Length: 126
Image 1: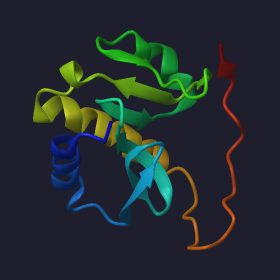
Image 2: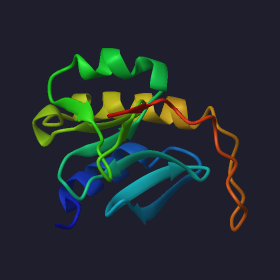
Image 3: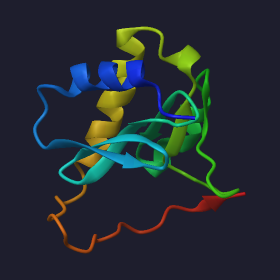
Image 4: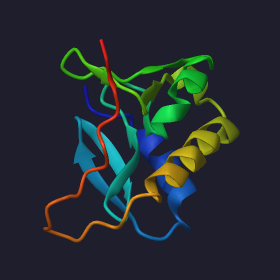
């Protein structure tokens, strides 16, 4: 399944005035990066993939339509999926985008073609 083109368009509109935004196909979806660090993605499974501060995972999971992103049978704190039902309004989507941008900006910019410096790995969940 391809990513949701309408969601990608909505993300482009929200991110149009932000500095350092690029798009890249990742995880089967279309990711939006801030200076090379992923913030959000129009997921191939529908909905939004969001990267947030790992310490905020449990609070975010208490919200409706939010679950841990699962890839290869594993999930990690800070990587969430918001189902389409949780993104019906501009306000709902904008809140997730703002949260993801705030976290992505905590990382140093990545240089094009350079090996990425990774933050400490968040704890894995099973």
